Length: 470
Image (cartoon, rainbow, N blue to C red; front, side, top):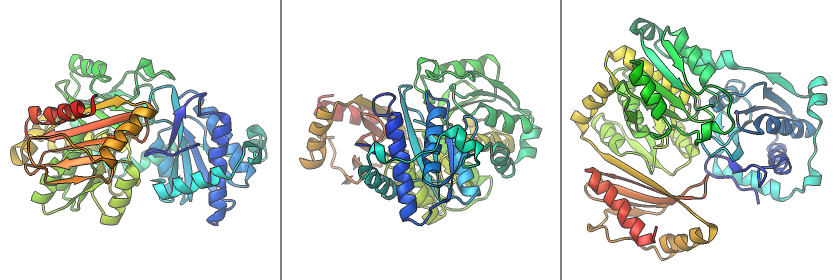
């Protein structure tokens, strides 16, 4: 069966990610839109640089046209945030991007967006799944893509300027121009190079780009901006004396950063920096939102500044919903996704990168200096994580232990509370915590922990590994 996870529907190419299943997914969305009274609506369709992404976007458009909808197909590979922005700007009921984001190269998938450019939540994706279950491949209607374009049933567009201008209008371009920064970019063979380069060069930054060519294998690595994957960017920043290194994942909704010393900045650090900058230097007010696997340093900062930090389950749709509900300043996750109030309601690595460059220009301080300013006031927390590949049988076994038998390791101290809302998260009285949860996008069991010392965080993970026999 076709099942949506925390980041859309993703599957291995030629296994479950097939033309037949793509057509079923889109037909399911069409049937849902008809039931919701959106018959004949315009729907934006975009795609990234993965193998079969362009072809899949065209197959999606064929089905949309077959059901009488008006597909707007972005006519070249583009960042997922650009698609979300277009859905919001044009006030469309739905949009979609063909992408598997940061997954390995053997995956592809489809992200669905709802009105306002938000990630489709579990209610919407559940309704799509219900409609898919009522369909057979023979039921799916479609129109040949070239024929549909020729007849005006499909329109090809490129809303690049509108997206770029929306960011340039809200960053302090004058301050960036006066700072004469040198920035290195690593799009990780993905789709951010044109957008980031255009924004930064418009702001008169000196810009260098690595790994910008089209490579559907992403250089043999996962297109996720992790510390290991960004070693070449780190070396480039050091050798060329750059002020900052910026990297985005395969579809440019996640951000990775290398500081001026070549050090990798964990996404937790980026979120803390961004929230601190917007409140202390820009003068914004409002809460922040994080998922249950992201640093609690945000909580300390928010409390000190008279604000609240809200915790939600993993999946950016939960962050977007809570941000809308609370008018939060920022929302983010420890995997590098960040959203900022006033832009799209989802994560955007390109906009977050532009704000971090503005931060350097406005404050006149390096990233290291700013983070030291934060930790001197709020203290330091230490983060550890781990991931373990799961077979279906092993996953079922561990799910039984964690969520039916509700087994916990002996952590040596009594927990303050335990939450099983999304995975199993254990909170301790000293502010430390650990979570164990199954990934919604890959066959993985993930653990994350935060402690007052590195040893405490690593120790929590080791105890749970031992208890589960991992």
